[in-house]
Length: 615
Image (cartoon, rainbow, N blue to C red; front, side, top):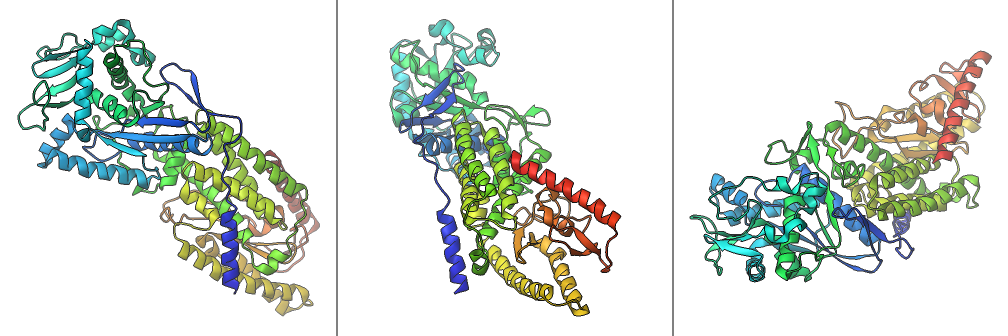
């Protein structure tokens, strides 16, 4: 029956994870990288959203991961907070020179290589927590639509055939070509780079819409003879097949802005004979990823694959937080110390949720004694959660300001952990605050971290078994300690209290990630310990090394001299404020020592209160 009650309590806790509504006035706004202006999307609007996907010839690397994890957070925010109906399509280039060359190198068919790498790419993205696109558009399945698009461009005089290939005539657009090149600091003149003089092009800037067939390469029939699509025409034709003549948002890495996205715009304008028309109302470009001072790319051979990154010490949520700590359009540097920083922050947030979860599922006898009336602490926590919900939503609607949103989540998590470890607490503000943190994490795709509150961790059986076993031991210790405290002074009483203290201070608890907090009402709280910095002895990320003294700032003032490493084992008795009155041998402390410890306690208490006020 105890187990069923606890299960019911956990179910109730899970139901309290709320979903933020989008009925408020603010709309989802994103910066258009073509114009620099903010483009707002009204709630309820259907957004036709296309992202350039991978060229599937090799493993996905961290540069890909940063782009698609960031776009995943952007799409989630548009849906969750902006109330938009997002239809998110992703293109897959499965016909390309790189695929053909790689397949020849491996001795396999190009289409077989493309299918294998495509499957591996989407498996890697799923592992990173990315939601699947609404549509996946393969080039090989849209050749007919590509041929039709090229014919339209040619019929309107913006393309010409030469030697079995078809080229876009950039000169027809005049000064209207080169918008993204100028925006990235590359002049239109620089775009006129030297090219192959024997290609049949009229202008060095002209680009292939259709490539004439070469011996031994895949090809399709067309009005210009056998051949295959050029790179830039793919997205134009596939998006029109999926969404019609116009797009609401087009996304990709900043390295695609020029020439790829510039050429997509040129193709659309050429197909409609409309040199000043607008095909897509908002362009979204994610920033570069650098490693050792250089842009990460396969061509430079300085890339780290997703599998290599996740097979080290980094979890998917760690990497997602690494991405979220930067604005999506900024350049980021991929380095282990930056991933470690993200991991430490994630573990601190997770520890707060676990502490709240443990406090919410205390034994029924302990829960009966909890107050229901709100005092100042409860009012402040409820107000903090309410304000955080509004501010997190506003940050994510404002061009996906994830650094601000993460800072707000971390700040509320700190306040939550302090409250969860307090001697008395009301369940309602605790649940509301924890649900706010978990909901914000879930909205951004931090599924595993959010489960620390919802009660469905990655390894629920192991987690619950450890917690239930420890709860039984803690319950026994609490009863023994209460009986000893109520008994008259004797050597047996002192021995029992010493054993209770030893159990509380056991290193085994720290290794399991727990800490015991003796409270003023005689009860003992089994809480999650704060995460320590990782070191060479740390276990795998799924069971991070934890240390109850790693974050002394999170120790309640009345537990400072029991839990902090510098004082552990030095004292055997304490007054009602947690101030030591006897040393480890049972001798009374001198007045000077008690005065010194009082100053230390007052200082810690002032910092504790200051952090609570700031949070």
